[in-house]
Amino acid sequence: MDTIKPGATTMVIFGATGDLSQKKLLPALYRLLELKMLPKHFNIVGFATRQIDDHEFKGFAEAAVHEHSQYKPVNDKTCAQLFSVSRFVSASFEDKDGFERLKPQLNELDQ
Image (tube, rainbow, N blue to C red; front, top):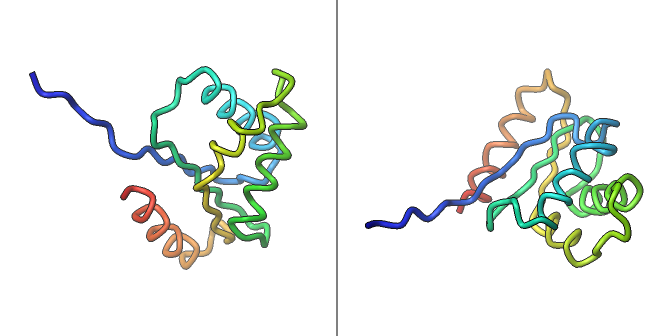
């Protein structure tokens, strides 16, 4: 019987720097990784109007987990692993060019 090998899974979070993401989504993804319930190759791409880069988004996401996770203490290693290959696209939702910049990010992470 053939074994199916799952590829990379990428979640795009629209409004990634907003309240819902900060207080609920990012801490929940951290918890799922702690419980080993995320795929091995799980990536996050943030999309929002805030003018930050990939590195700043990683810091933002890790800070959100530390501040809002219901499960303390936060495991720094797990947190860093979750956001290690995360990306961020800064654009408004009406900006077609923002979605064009999103496409190569997704293609790269799918490799």
